Length: 430
Image (cartoon, rainbow, N blue to C red; front, side):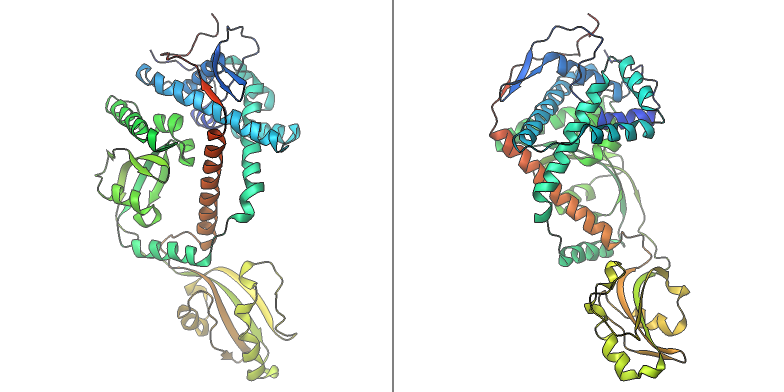
């Protein structure tokens, strides 16, 4: 059977709750018989916890998970609960906590995002036999872990200019090729011994897709990639934006096709190509430049010497203060997103000849001496700015550290799985 959801939330709100509400709930108004589903370092996870998690996962899938997928659903529900226990235990060991006010602030943001007040969201949860404390507990686990990982490892993550340049070059080179609308499912591989088991689980999902289960429904409930919140949707992507191993898989897929599970970087990936489109066509170039100017009375030599130091300042960072004093008569301004055709003619050719970090020769006009430092350039191909690429590389590295951190903690933990197979969540009203 398929669980019939009764939520009064909109479909968008339901999708959001799929990300944030999947938790080990104990509905306050429901009496249930509990057995031990697992222990994590002697802390118990009950069968009721697992049943509630499964019920909520079914609810947030919109009733699209078939009964044949219940064993997988149960396994994912229990694994999520074990992971949460391990994370919270590590935070407790390190005496790393967040305040109730921070959790309540996040709860309020979620309520607002689905067009509800806090009491309304609480009532919506209770109507599904889910205690509001369920959501708060899940939020506490997520917030604690995110901030713990950031506090311990953020300063260790470094993204070099060379790494960003490499991605920019790949993106630029790939603009002459097709674009792909991609979806993905990512299943974690705990160790080499589990690789075949995870592959088989992926093949079962593919079989379920053939039987009519939507890709996005499986991605929301089973995928461990950040795209799971969007049903596995990675959006329009070029091959250059993808990991080379996965790009090779995607390039061979026809439109509407799904790949077999492919191992990469500790995950088993199932890739789907929903659509393809022609290469991008260049539009108007835009620039981010640091402009330096000096009046004629300072003399060309003085202006030239000052302008030569422009790329030694931190002007491209946009802090508003220069790290090097260029002189009282030298003015410097950061100009962002300047279209090529909006520049005055004397500046178009010089800036067009620059590479990032280069300073133009002195440009002399009737009003004074001028120079341009190129901070960034958009070729009009819709490529992401350097800052966005740097942020993604940083987030990817931190996410990889987070996964390895959790994996190591689990290896050092005493985890005893006791739950036997079941085909559907228990009836909490029984």
